[in-house]
Amino acid sequence: MTSPALLDARLNRRLASALRYLAVAARGGVRPVGESWDVVVTRAGPSGTALLRSMDHHARPHRHCASVIADPSSQLLMWLVPLGTMRIWPNNHGLCLGSGEISVPPVSRNHPLPRTSAPYWVRPMHQHCLVSPPVLDRELAVAVLGEPRPNIVDLLPSRANAP
Image (cartoon, one colour):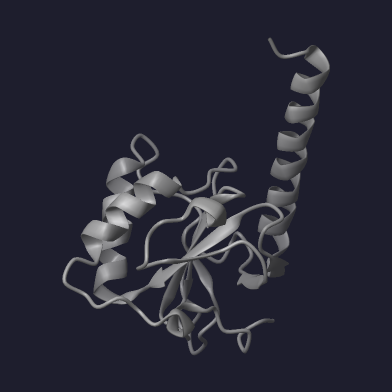
């Protein structure tokens, strides 16, 4: 049986995490990975588009999966996943990061900016929803069938785009 104090502590940690998440969403900028979320980095392009569609299918009733950043300059997708995912991430077609920094766009930037390669939310955050690691792992394996495993260096987010 769990004590009320332990339940209160867990609730307070979840609330603090949600507030940090919302604060980051409002202003954007370079943010540390491993504080409010981990990040799974995958290729964009045809397999990324297929993966987004497949993840949207599993996100019903929300109509779209949440918390995915597109980085046009490096042709990558960055999927925000729960803290601790890095320790259990099994898929070789996506690099899971539990530390470092990524460029997070303001929550209002949900499309590519003209004449720039700034990151944008290809699937915006809503209600503190993060991407489900087990579903992402399974759907990534299907989306990349027949593609060679990417070089890890190719999946590292570029710091050159940081605002």
